[in-house]
Length: 476
Ligand code: AMP
Ligand code: ZN
Image (cartoon, rainbow, N blue to C red):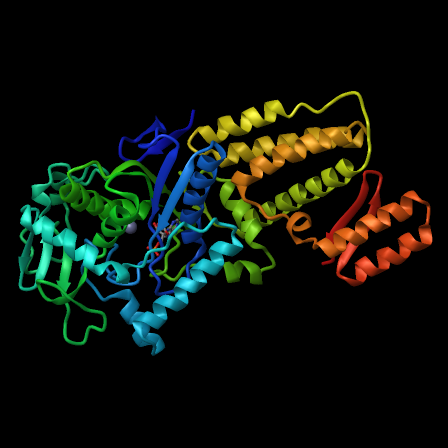
């Protein structure tokens, strides 16, 4: 039984989808004004892991990840996300490009990074700029129903009209009144009201016509517009980093529920932050590493994937190169193990005992069922590796056992999502040469076998003959 920690109830709850067999996931995506950093990757890995495990258990998943290409303002850490400069416009001025060029460039970068991390692409990546009419429609309805008001071309959501405001974050209006440090907008009725639409100053580059002014949407409204558009009024799972809980997700609940009259999200999943020297890694602080930095230091996207999966998404994680080094070693260990198993599987080793994989499968599922506990699932994998390696060392692992373990590995890896060197990157041409060499060795034609080894090595692969068969590696 899959349980997920729901930020809303602050408990682990059994997961039951709204529609049997189907799950809708909405993940807050990147604001495309800079290179995404590895803290962002941690957030996208959470939604990827949730999706992968739901698919593993047989659900059909539909996942939407938005691209914020307008309206996300710079002071959102302290305010309601509606003061300060537009980050994309600021980048456009800095880089002497149009906001659109900025957004497309960084969106591409984000997609490339997701690909390298083997994050399964969302079914759709809607852009905020392409959904302004939907946002206007929701805002009109909120004004009509009395949840929002217009003043001087600006429209705000009136938080006092929504009794449940604060239920997700604990920031109820009562608690917010104490110690609030808000820069008040002169047109707001209450300091915690948040912007749905803002009138654009003359020099503002990105603006749209609306019934209230030529302006642009507030940050939060885009997610309500795009989630209702592509996933309906109620979505099963909404993900994001913990910084999104307030004000962003609190605002999303308020405006969407007042618009639809229905529950907006059934399960709220939030990853805790990736830290550097005890502080949140963030674009605005500049204390960030990108995937390129990771690669320049000799590590791979898969090392990073393993590093992140080694810690539970609800634990804060301090980034360290030492931990990444350990992750690198662990990926190599997994890689070597699988290559070894593949070699054993292609041989014909027959032993009476058959390796029992069922306990490892069960432990894997128990770990993942427990709020996607990937560190526990990985330690179960390491246990499996050390037990099987023991049998290999004792020359007791049969080819059938190797095949059984490989088949379990394939299932487990549909959730871990590792791309292993030996598996994905040995092209068919090399595999053919390997097979020919195997036949040559079996026929004791050692001259041909050596010739084939030379050809394989010239093509950039190393061949090692071990007692468990041939091992092929990409030459480093
Ligand atoms: P942004 O582009 O800033 O809107 O962030 C995209 C996603 O990354 C959001 O879900 C954020 O909550 C998440 N995020 C940002 N910084 C971090 C961090 N240091 N650790 C984990 N998640 C983060
Ligand atoms: Zn969002």
